[in-house]
Image (cartoon, rainbow, N blue to C red; front, side, top):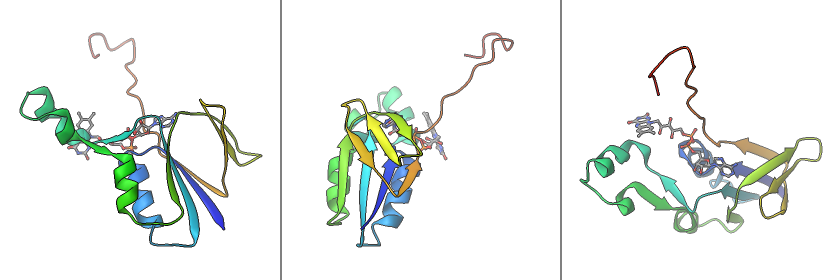
Length: 120
Ligand SMILES: Cc1cc2nc3c(=O)[nH]c(=O)nc-3n(C[C@H](O)[C@H](O)[C@H](O)COP(=O)(O)OP(=O)(O)OC[C@H]3O[C@@H](n4cnc5c(N)ncnc54)[C@H](O)[C@@H]3O)c2cc1C
């Protein structure tokens, strides 16, 4: 059975997951360092105290369970290293996860160039 590993349960990872679960003959492993998907566009309401944390998060275990796929598992762990030659992801728990296909959807960080003062 083909093994697909998705790193990151953000918008990118979940979109890929929702497409992949249409195929019931693949094994899918979703990996995220958090237990939840963060609804980023809803965060403004949270900051403005118009909603609570439950309104801006979706539990990834529950989300995966609801997709009703026999070979889908969620691992709440941090991906620390990838050996592309061995097609293996290594986690913070020193677990190795082998894959045939790897989707890296771990998001991005904003870079604040030092020459643009006060940008941050
Ligand atoms: C406050 C705010 C409001 C926004 N509003 C909008 C909007 O209205 N419309 C819009 O289009 N965009 C909006 N955006 C931008 C949008 O949220 C991002 O473009 C989008 O979240 C990027 O999705 P992503 O899947 O690439 O990454 P992310 O959503 O950042 O997801 C990355 C996931 O990977 C996980 N991860 C990271 N590193 C590891 C690791 N080493 N091991 C395991 N897991 C890992 C993280 O925990 C996270 O769950 C907003 C962003 C913010 C911050």
